[in-house]
Image (cartoon, rainbow, N blue to C red; front, side, top):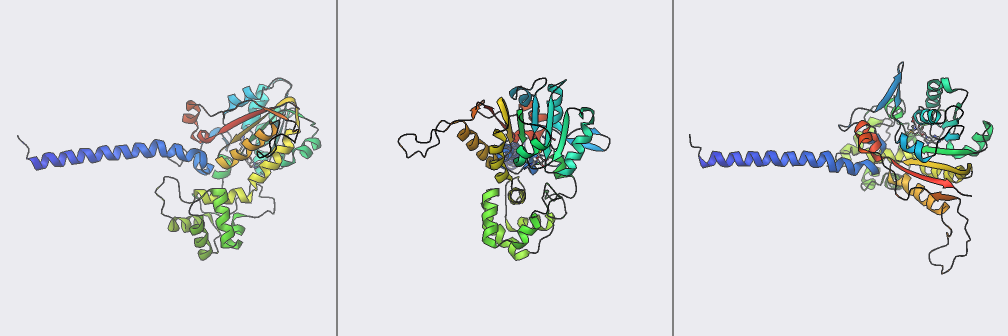
Length: 368
Ligand SMILES: C[S@@+](CC[C@H](N)C(=O)[O-])C[C@H]1O[C@@H](n2cnc3c(N)ncnc32)[C@H](O)[C@@H]1O
């Protein structure tokens, strides 16, 4: 039976619309996800491609463990070997420490450090079979020189920093890191400390100070509007109150939750993350044994910028201002860069652990 031209045209329009919507899903499902991966708060990156299932590795009883990233690459590039001495400066639940212990069998030693006392307790419980070769302690990696001495270490053949926070910290109640939960706006990794909380910041900082913080640490273009809305709506004590205030303020078309950048900014400020990284790297380099290696995994551009510039400086023969025509500094490099290009996870690792897609590993060797 012949169809009327009107019905035929309607059919074309419907097919075209379906094709457009398919294209749109594809665009959001690939390009947009990749774009957010590197620059955005890991809170997004800890979830699967649909954005809601945290990524865990094996479990021990009721305990589930954060899945460590780039493990084979770290073991290879840190030259992990029997009887080597290693520091895992961001121990978390001990995933990387476990790999270091296994790769340095039977006599390798590992010192693990984390600001988060409950993660340290979990790592110690998990690695109890290695208690003659492993010790996990609570502390800030920027104090590595003191922590090492207190625990009987003088230098390390390999030092690892896996920056940011863990799946456990975003998923466990009480940290106040996730805008997907409704809990006190805390954000401290070390909840035994009396350092400032995110709630203190949003409820006491002046509007301009808040805007600058959100812009600087969140790279949020709507920082001024968000700061104004926060000040207008305070007091804000919970993650939900804050995220809803932001949701009402900015009309984002991106797949990233509009609160992501503000949460990242607050977390970085609460834990003084970039300052610790700058100071920590200086201190850590001095503890590498000759030809010892440093591996740093960063997850966003602010972290990687600090890592890149420190490694570049520490590996340069001249750090004079570029305006000077000749070198006056006689700078002695302490490091040699092992990878000029960052090491990224393979596509199969990303498929297994979507969070790993934003990881960037840099390696340097002590030549001093
Ligand atoms: C990405 S997780 C590390 C996960 C770990 N590699 C694992 O396999 O379970 C980052 C960890 O660094 C810790 N951390 C952040 N800043 C720190 C600092 N300045 N000193 C020590 N630990 C820190 C966090 O508490 C968190 O547990």
